[in-house]
Image (cartoon, rainbow, N blue to C red):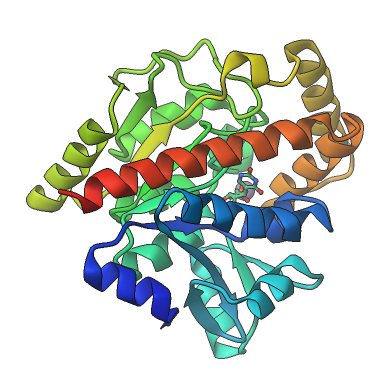
Length: 298
Ligand code: PSU
Ligand code: MN
């Protein structure tokens, strides 16, 4: 594993660090917007006084903190989507991969990074009771002490089933200034949360308790977009339904499902879903930086 000097120095000095994933760059956003977005995401962390650590596997080496060259490679073509199980294979064949939430969490934990920002988590897909399609993101968050700030899970998923899995696997979930679990492009959902948090100091205190008790699990901080920034719900429902039907018609399965749906949803919405997606990632990064700062100041 290679930890960038700036990240290593920050971790040693107690300067706040925010991990960022790379699958969103390589498989979640269309080129060339993706490279622009990757740079912007890092700049938002810096503007908040924290150090960004974008994580990916480059030529077999897990990298924590990417230079401009590496960022450009991850934003280019032919990059594998790397979940936890892909990491040893990429290492053995010196491959290059963009890490999912699961892959990023596993590497961030090894580097000692406690706070991570993404767009939306993977979770349980509709029909999972027969297809078994459940993202490795959830079980991985049960195993590593990394807090992930996200806008809930993508609404292409079975949100209720995903919340149930988080309960079973003992992944704690808190709503940031909300009582309802957000659904990525949409600010709310019918799904009530057990816990609402209104101050970053309280999130820092949760992390410290996990550290003290050796809880070992992560934390999901669900951060809804302000309602005036959400995607139009009527268009959202129609587009998600159509993209889901097309994925089924085209026999998409395995790791291709999520990138296929996200790409198709951007096309069908003529880019409107993309603007909302970018806005929610920015918002999650800002909150993650504030949490990392509160945690570092402890
Ligand atoms: N959030 C986004 N865009 C994305 C993803 C999340 O705004 O592309 C990615 C994350 O990397 C997440 C992955 O881990 O989608 C989930 O893929 P799967 O369902 O195959 O586990
Ligand atoms: Mn899957």
